[in-house]
Image 1 (cartoon, rainbow, N blue to C red):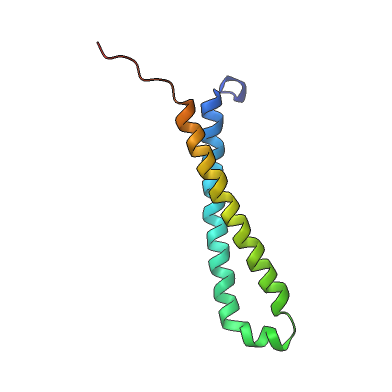
Image 2 (cartoon, rainbow, N blue to C red):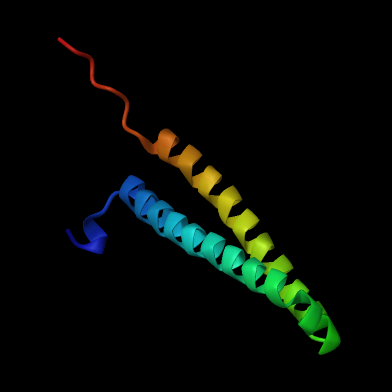
Length: 89
């Protein structure tokens, strides 16, 4: 099926799937960065590198929150775009 032949519902579902995948990797990135932070917090502070890493962690967390909000919005849109059920005979 070509991109032109997709319905709006299919486009939203594709976008939703991509955002969920991005959210998964963003969550893993936050967890990995946090683990590194916990291991090297003292050393980073000594090297005056703690603040930039904290800023990155905050921005990554904000991205994760924004992804969740957009995923919720698209999930609601998917429900709205679902065709009405056909009446059973």
